[in-house]
Length: 197
Image (cartoon, rainbow, N blue to C red; front, side, top):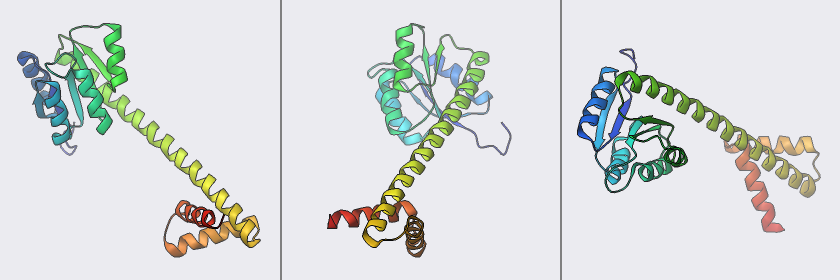
């Protein structure tokens, strides 16, 4: 990480003291900032809210609420990369962690030579997945806008006798005049039409 790049913030959720110390040292040596440490699941959820970390290292087996349930609650509130830590590599636990929203899974004992490359890989994959999700949402929004505009054009054509091109121009003009997106104008036309139907 360069001097000008802001340090990514990490939250460590682990109840074994020595593991916490090793993780913290490895993260700090690699240029990450540790903004919190949780020793049980409910505390992990609260610290994730209050510290807004860039990523979380989460032990699966913590006292009280386990790491899988904590991960589920955290990812329901905010999209953040969570790397699960465990002493076991059972397929069932891996599947549960992924279903809860984890983006990587490391088996203890974890060394800094294993942690940092795995962490960087998980962060890169998480970022790529977020880009895909955003692009997908943008495409859905564009398709929904197109559908609304088509429906509004049809209403204008039917109610005013305008051609399709003129109905489209009318929607554009109203949108410009009101300084609002065409989607909103189309929605208003559809809503107004429903009052008279």
